[in-house]
Image (cartoon, rainbow, N blue to C red; front, side, top):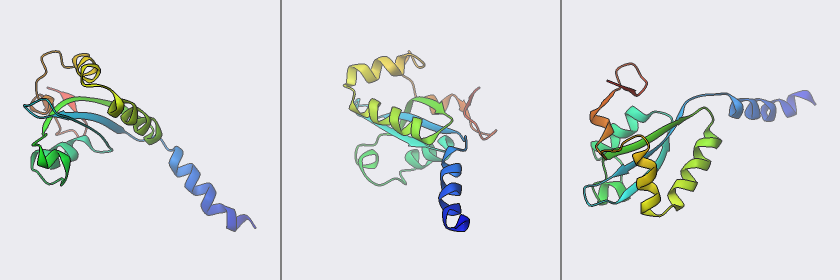
Amino acid sequence: MLFKTLPHVISNAARNLKKTYYVYILANKQGLFYTGVTNNLERRIIEHKSKLIPGFTLKYNITRLMYFCEFGYINDAIEWEKKVKDWRKEKKIALIKTINFELKDLAEELDFSSGKPDSK
């Protein structure tokens, strides 16, 4: 009986392990936004900038990293991503300005060599 429930227990335990996840906002020069979530910000931004991600960001050339925040649990990151996606443009800009007042591409300012996005 224990072995039948074990995969379920392991699955729940694995979901609760703390890792690092990022919610990020990209923009294009015309002011369109894309909000996403990833467990590897460096890889994901490189994919967007290299135009390896099909869909909305590729179609509208959305490659400028405007905002990101870190979470320890995927459920928290997904919840924040969903909230931000529902916001109007003005509210997203206000959020972006909390860490990026000049509205520049943060990817140009980040050092990904350590495996974590730290400012130069």
